[in-house]
Image (cartoon, rainbow, N blue to C red; front, side, top):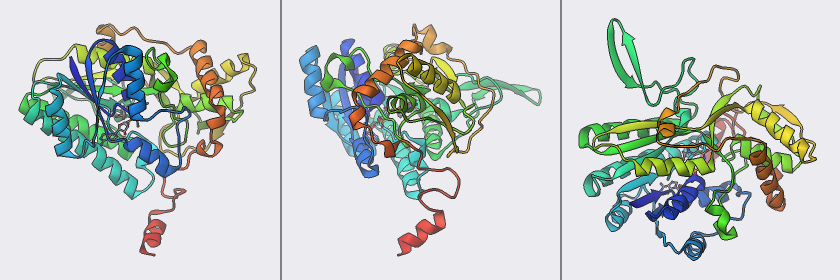
Length: 399
Ligand SMILES: NC(=O)c1ccc[n+]([C@@H]2O[C@H](COP(=O)([O-])OP(=O)(O)OC[C@H]3O[C@@H](n4cnc5c(N)ncnc54)[C@H](O)[C@@H]3O)[C@@H](O)[C@H]2O)c1
């Protein structure tokens, strides 16, 4: 199949692009390289020395004999997006190309607005471009399990059948956002569902859990193919950050009580799930939702796992409960279905001691690149943010 991957220079997109290419699909990547710019604006860098896009693509062609075409373009630039779709005539478009950090979207008004425009306009453009130039293509869109929040009932896959005042209907599952970033994902889902209903497009919304891990079969083939690995307070996610902290003799920073329970999956499974979705498109006019995760963990249970594995490796790992910068429940019920991908044949990579040991060992390999100042959270959800209150920021701008 011809597959256009938007956001293919990023963590999930790069792993998925190589996986699909290795499976024989004809891959093109469209990426604005915005994420590399956001990192440098915020003074952040991935633990791993990722190569430039041309270097990565040359290395992949050398290793696999397969070429991947690259369009440096922004999904918010409608003309450039349409040009790439016309040039590639994709059977599937996979959209990873968004600002994906909740803390980033909560820095201040400017970053919330950037996130809104980048994600919501980008998604809207993809839908209109498909309507105009690729109406039969299948859209595979990355959403997040965070769209659902933490309801006190089991989370269904996208839709719930409810009875109300004696009547019954199947409706989108309620969404309860945890940041402006999550709000963009909810808006995307609504836009896509609507476009499927009115234009007959077909789409799969992958509500993905938190991704962990560094290598996949393909990215491990050559050091030039290495993926990004974020551990900082803005883009880093819990388990990746804990493994870096363990390698650095830095206490594992559990936000609040640590009872926050979330859905997780290995980066290898991200690529496989995207492959399964691409290779089994739904009927035209269908909007389907898959909950893309394999396991659930509380933040504290992940910290304890890293502490135990660290001890086996001879590391003394402390756990520190730091003030929670977010506004979220720290003890709650959490249960979700994930049957759709399993029924398509996903055999999950389950998190265990070996995987955690490998992640700590990767962090040790690149220890010299770790910047301790990036680790602690710098963005707070409440008004008294480290970047100043709304009023103080306004005064500063006013000079
Ligand atoms: N990483 C996770 O744990 C996780 C969890 C749930 C959902 N997701 C979703 O998966 C997707 C990919 O996440 P990731 O971790 O790979 O993020 P990432 O930041 O590593 O990669 C995103 C890529 O998209 C590109 N991009 C951003 N906006 C763009 C635009 N307007 N036009 C073109 N390219 C653009 C960036 O340059 C970057 O290369 C995101 O949509 C994210 O919300 C990720």
